[in-house]
Image (tube, rainbow, N blue to C red; front, side, top):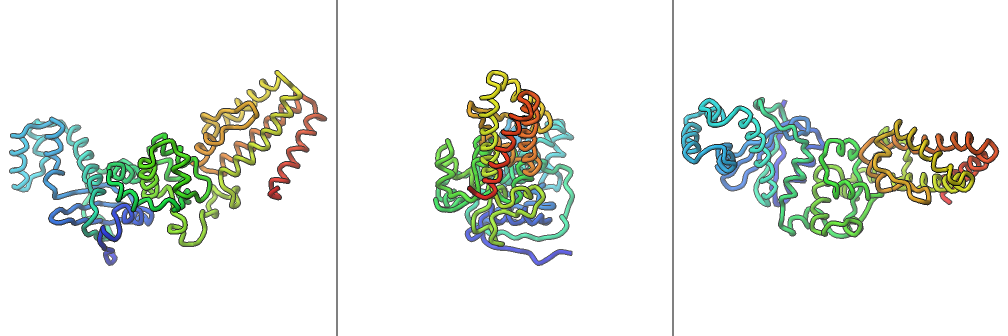
Amino acid sequence: MNTAPAQGRLEEQSLPEVLRLLVQGKKTGVLRLTRSRINKTFYLSDGRLIFATSNDPDERLGEMLLRKGLITYRTLEETVRAIQAGKRQGTILVESGEIRSRDLVEGVIEQVQEIIYRAFDWEEGEWRFEEGELPSREVIVLRMSTGDLVREGLRRVERWTRIRDGVGGLAQCYTLSARATGLLASLSLRHDEMSLVASLDGPTPLEEIISAARAADFEVCRAVWGLWAAGVLDRVPQDQADGGVRDLTQPHAERLAGASVGREIDRFNQLHRFLFELVSYALRERATVLFEHAFQAVGQEHAPLFEGVAVDSSGELDPIALRHNVVTREVARYLQGLDRLLEVEMDLARQMMGEKKAAIIADGLLELKQRQLEGK
């Protein structure tokens, strides 16, 4: 049964804001956008953008195929007349041999994507969402993640005033959303975007995010806007209606107990530097063998966690690479991998150093952990 439609103006609530709410709400229905005589229709199924249509002549399938050089001007004119007679343009082109079925499928997907991307340029107009079963079932639907569609649409925005309004002021704080872990697995993030996500350690002002990034401020702000629109980031406090920064009731966050991923990694590195220093002092050149064996064993058990993670001369594991690996997967599972590394290294230390010397290191680790818990 359909519910009453939600509606508004894009001047008051932008398309990224509207889509973010519909996607997070896992809505099914039709989003209608109107600007002057142009109408666009987005189809959503359980919060996923699966199709879009437009009455803009420049966004028709034939015009796109003409731009790509797949059909001629004359062919376009002939198919336009056929459209007016009630026939589908793509079907006509395939049946006449002008294009292959494969070209039609690829063409329709590209056409739908362009209809969506160009809508992000709209700064004014009306929107209306009609929740309920979709009116028709399309044979060709988008497989691209909605988050990637939204981010690509915003990457095409070049006006700074729109980006500034979208991302907020320098004091605006951002944090990873409770949904970030699941979302990141479905997104095709660039290296700079993944580094930006990995660098966040609790609520962080936009100015600090910009300072930590290597890209130009313009690009960083647009990337933050896109990650927020895709649901990876939350604004603090605007998106935190319950007053909390993260939903720590979720299973993947149990072991964090309110602590940030970055803080957990710092604690682990403090323990690992302590163990590394004492083992290296006692075993000297043989210590390399111990740590290589430990990393090889634990790396096989927790390969995604340690992928691309280097160890420096002090025994510290690369915190940026670790955080990158942790935030893209279930946190609790991979924190177990860090504990496992310490456990394997201690077992090897007992074998190579003897119980007495290993016991000294174990006691030191236990005391260090206790001080960490007490916040010293």
